[in-house]
Amino acid sequence: MIPIDITPQQLQEGSKNTLVEHLGIEFLEVSPSRIKARMPVDNRTVQPFRILHGGASVALAETLGSIAAQMNIDQQNLVAVGLDINANHIRSVRNGFVYGETTPVHIGRSTHVWEIKITNEDDKLVCISRLTVSIIAKK
Image (tube, rainbow, N blue to C red; front, side, top):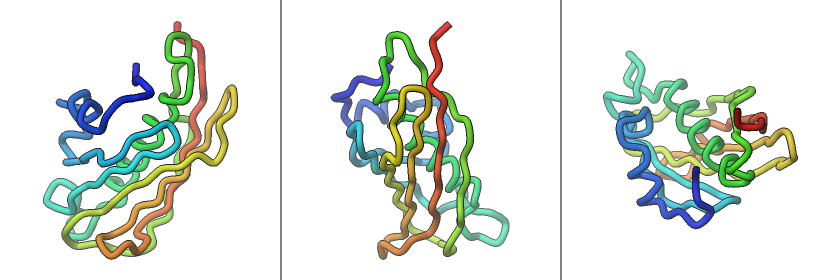
């Protein structure tokens, strides 16, 4: 469960030994309506042409949207699971960090839609993604 008042540091601690840690994703701001993180563009996140791998961008996007969705439901009885994600890759990045920020498009009873914008260090759009999650009862 993700407490509503969780800090970026607590979220980071809970991400040990996961893809989040492996990719070097660092949480910067966390609230139920906005999550911001950064990810390095390095040997863990680039493709053979040495530019940011689209899959790494999608992993960052899904991480942010999924956490945000989980923070906005009854965590005792419900769970948010990924249903669909899409991404448009706008510009390449060769080094430094990219920054992801998620905001809600729709928060309903059975589905959520989250928009995730990924920017470079100059605040230029690198990727825009939309994540749809299904809200289901815990078994």
